[in-house]
Amino acid sequence: MQTNCITHKQVAAPAEHGAALIAFNDPRIQYEGRIDDSDPEAATLCWSGTTVRFRFSGTGVSVLLKDYSGQNYFNVIVDGNTEMVKKIRVDTGGKWYVLADGLPPGNHTIELFKRTQINKEYNRGYTKFYAMKLPSGTTLLQPPPFQKRKMEFYGNSITCGHAIEDSSGSDSGASLYENNYRSYAALTARHFEARYRCIAESGIGLLAGFRKELMPEIYNRVNPFDPTRLWNFSAYQPDVVVVNLLQNDEAVIGNPQSDAFKKRFGTKAPGAKQIIAAYRDFIRSLRGHYPEAHIICVLGNMGITRAGSPWPGYVLQAVQTLADKKVYTHFFPYKGTAGHPLIQDHAAMAKSLAGFIHDHTGW
Image 1 (cartoon, rainbow, N blue to C red):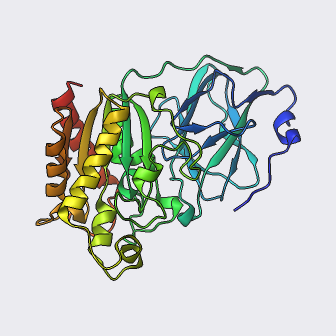
Image 2 (spheres, helix red, strand yellow):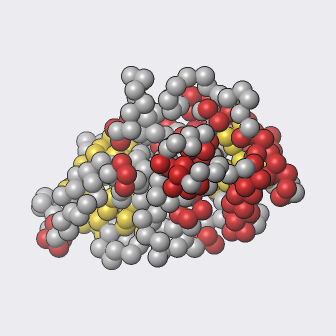
């Protein structure tokens, strides 16, 4: 889906007399996540959880954004107040959005957090951040220091926060109900006051899934749509890496009549050795990029951890073959309900994972 470009006039001419324009690449703007910088006019925000953060002295601020599809939502967090989060949907035409106004005079911090995943099958995609507009008398300040601890998550729809806010029971795929900010991954990172990176896409798998590509094919990209732009892993070395995959592999391999199965395997399902080897190889790839990180292999809490499931055993065997003292397994119990985990389920997973990390890393 192509959208019209932002014009130079839109970026260069503030509507309010005396307003100051700050370009996206001002060093006082802090980014969290894999930022695609291939556009000289904007920062391209791709993955769930990607964040723009800045501090200013004044009473409000606006930003110029444009979306690939008009299906992406962002949370606006002012001064760390997670109880008063504003949600905005970004249009395809390119517009100024008021993130805050009428604040008490003084210093304030704003976070613009991408709730939704980048996923062409869901008609979503990336969002362009062009500039911010400061009213007369407002000053952009130096950014807050980055947290010392660093975390990174690799996963599927569970880690994205798919349908997390759909309390109707329909397990809707609408972007309105997706909120990575309330996912177990983001909750765990905030619990430890850690930096947060989320490399996740609904439907993705290691051997099979419901997407065109597999996680080993996109995990090293800046933008998952662009195979030519690879991420520099040395730019961000996490202390803790969490991998939550295989739910979609389990679904595809368990349905030999599906198109997804036939596409990957024809008529013969992969055996346990092939599954174990694929998982082991992916963890080994991560270890190659992150030689010092604690790597936690989690599963659940959907059907993959149901009683009698062989998949936890596959992960255990893969980890055992690595003989790596800093690679662990931690499985969330099956939640016992249909559909994706909701807010309360993610909170329970975050509590479980945080306890495990505390016990095994000393955090």
